[in-house]
Length: 167
Length: 274
Image (cartoon, rainbow over all chains, first blue to last red):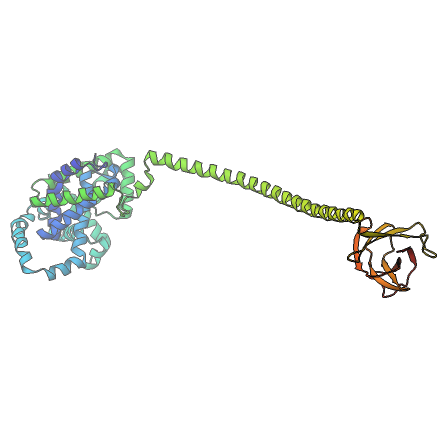
């Protein structure tokens, strides 16, 4: 149904998953207004790329979650975003600040970030950098001055532990 | 490495969360295809993750729904109208609607048919072109021979007109009349218009001259030969207009160098008195 680009199916998809995707985006960009832009971009991309979704590679939710995470990280890293933050005018900001005040405090206590707190500090930093900031293992090894093999092992171990906390 | 160790190595989580690198992803997808238990482990984690993220998720602001759905459906509208320039769907290029495939096949068949017809018509064109050239050559030939016939007919008509004209005096020149003619049987006629004094000649019977030689008609006026014109043997049996001779007592023909002589040098073939 989705692959046929059915409007109703897409509306259902939005109603069902927009909150979850919005959450992961918020947890990465940490800005409610920006998260709205990213969410919009994410759904447009889901719509465009739905033909590329391959059921053998995983569930639809996993595919969408990764699109959301990648878009959020791209936005966070793009210079355009950094400039727009500097140029933001005050009146435009009023709503944003309120929205942020409402949504952001809760963000750390839900979803993946909630389980992140249960990890040891050294593991949490690695997951933060790898999953929420999108750095490669090589970049992390350099930043943290740890051997690449150690970075990989620690991240794997952290993920196994995280999984245990999901239940 | 056995499958259980592989499953519990953290690769499943790494893959699903998008933290595995290219080689790890390729390996994992292969393992999923080969081992149902790897795939099952992946799905278990995916469901776990999905439930966890869904639980307590923060909904975006309600007005965003209309914005996003509106944008997506507008985009779909543009795409179905065929105005999209986006190249994001390479798969669609090959998914031609079946109707289009028939149209494409028909177009190719028509093109091939057209090519065959082109060759056929080109050969026909060459054939007709060749025949046209042939006809043109034949026609030119006919016109030419018709012109020859017309000229001949004209000269015969002139001859008949001259012969029947009562104002024409006829001088018969005989080989026997010429002293020591090389061909005593020779004969030629001079027709002399008594009004205009124009002289016409008909060479009834003269031997063909050798190459470089030509017969010349003379009018003898007061015992002096006056050139009356050269004789063209091609027109031997028709009346040929010679020069205008106002007065003469005799006419004679001698054989001279081609082009004639100022005074007669060669032998006299025929002669006749006025």
